[in-house]
Image (tube, rainbow, N blue to C red; front, side, top):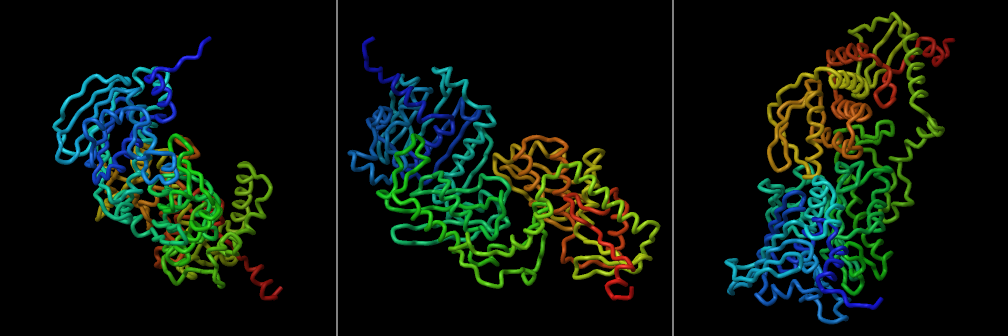
Amino acid sequence: MSIKLLPSQLINQIAAGEVIEKPASIIKELVENSIDADAKKITIKFNDGGKSFIQVIDDGCGMSKDDLKLSFQRHATSKIAESEDLINIKSLGFRGEALPSIASVSQIVARSATEGSEGSEIIIHGGVVKSEAPSSILTGTFIQVKNLFFNTPARRKFLKKTETEKRNIYQVVKHFMLAYPQIAFSLLEGDRKIYKLEAGDLHHRITQMYGRRFSSSILPVSLSKDRFSVNGYIGSLNLVKKRQGEQYLFLNGRSIQNRLLNSSIYSSYKSLLNRGEYPFFVLSIDMPPDMVDVNVHPAKSEVRFQDEWRVFYVVKSAAAQALSDLLKAIPDFQPYNRYSGTYADTHLTKQISLPTEPVNPASAETAPHKRVDQFDNLDKHTASPINENTIERAHKRIESIMKNQLVDENIPIDNVWQLQNKYIITEVNNGLIIIDQHVAHERILFESAKKALDGNGLPSQTVLFPQTVKFQPEEYVKFIDIVPYLNKIGFRMRDFGENTVIIEGIPSEIYSGTVEEILHDILDKYIDRLEINASFLDHMAATYACKSAIKAGERLKNDEMINLVDKLFATEHPYYCPHGRPIIISLSMDELDRRFERI
C-alpha cells in the first residue's frame, strides 16, 4: 500500500472534527473572529439548535475581497506570522482553521467589506466555492451557515437533541457577553429575542442578564499583583446555588476552564460555604501572554500556566479580599441548617453573629469558623447509616411520646407568649410547651402544599404590585415544565418575554418570603434531577413551606400566635417539620420541680 497525500477538502473535513464539535462551536469561532475584528455590535441568530441555520453579523473592520476568499483557506490568518508569535498571542483566534473547517461541512454564505470599499460575497458548499460576487454590505462581516454536516451524515447523527444544542449555544454566548460587556450583543432563536444587551460595564451587563436581584448581591473584585491583575465580581451568599453553572473565568479575554482556579475561589468562601454549594462569580485574569500557553486544546478552552500555583494565589487573594467584609458578603445573613439544607432568615444586621476573632481571608482554609463548627455536633447523632424506615419509626416514636404527654390537654388560647420573637410558649395542665414558630408554620404550609399537589390546588391571592422574575434561557426552558405544579400551590404567572414571567398571584398562606427565591430554589432542584416524581414534589412542597413560613425574629400578635397553634395541631404530624426538626418541646411540672429541687 503506497502512501498518498490527502486532498485538501478531506483534510479540512478531518480538521473540522477537532474544531467543530457542535453548532455552539461554530458560533464560538465566528464570534471570536468578530471580537478580533474590533466589533462594537454582534448579532447571532440560529434555528433548530443551530443544526440547520446559524448567522453571525458584526460591525467590525471587515475584509477585502481577496482576504475574504483567502480566509477560507486552511492556516490562512492575520493573527500570527512566525513561530515566535505563538508566545505572544493577544487575539482569540490565530490558527486559521475555523472558517475552512466550517465551510467543509456546511453550506456557507459570507459577505464582508472594509470601511469605504465595495463589499464582496462568497458562497461555499462542502468546501467547494460555488460563487463569488459583489455585495451591498457596507462594513463589517456577515456569515450564514446552513445544514451542518450535510455531507458527513455519520457526524450529523451524533448531534444532540435540539434542546441540548440550544442550551450549549446559550452557554457559549453568555461567556462572550460577560467577557466583553463593552460590546452590544443580540441573540435570536428564529424571530424570538433571547438577549438584546446594550454596551456598558460589567456590573450593568450582569444586571441586564440576571436581573436586579444580582445587582445588589455582587461584590467588586480588583487586585493587581506583579504582572497579574484580577477584576470582576463575586456573589454574596444570596447567590449561592446547589448546582454549578454560574462560575465564569476569563484569561486575557478568553473563556477558560480550570479546576484549580475554581477551587481557589471556593476556598476563599470556605468559612461561609458548605459542601455542595457553588458561588456566583465573573472574574477576568490579565497576565502577559508569554506566561501562559493557549495552544493546548483545539477549542482553546484549556490553558497551561507557566506558574499555576502563583496564579492560584493571586486569584484566591483577590476573591478573599472582596469577601473580607462579611457584612457585605452576607447581606441577608442566615445561619445554616443542616437538616433542611437551607438558611433560616434573619432580617436585622444587629442579629448577625460574627467570629469574635478576625479571620485572615488569605488563610481561610485553616482558619476556624464558628458558623460551620457550631453545627458539627449534629452530625455525631447521624454518623451511622439511617434509612427512611428508621427515620419514620423515630418520628412515630416522637409523636407517641408527645401525644402521651399532651393527651386530653386543652391549650388555653389566652395564655400564649412569644419569646425573643422566635418561640411561642403556652401552658398546659401538666407544664409548659414551647413551639418554634418557623418550623410550626413550615409544617402547616408543607401539609397544605402536599394536599394541593395531590388534589385541586391552593387558592391564590392577587398581588397589588406584580413582580417580574427573570431566568436564564436554558433555565426558562425547564421552568415551563414545572409551571403546572407551581399553579397548584397557588402561584399565578404569565409570560413577559425574554425568559421572564410576571407573578400576578401567590399562595394565600404565604406570610413572608421572597417569591423569586422560592421559584429559583424549586427550579434548581428540578434541573438537578430532570424528573418530576414523588421525591421532587416533596422537595417542592418543603421548599415552598420553608421559604414562605414565618421567620425567627418576626413579631407576632396574640391572635396570630393562637391561629398558628390551632393550625399546627390540626396537621397530621405536628411534632416535627418536613426536614425532621422538632417543632414542640414539652416541659412537664415534674421536670420543673426537679430543676428547682422541689422533689
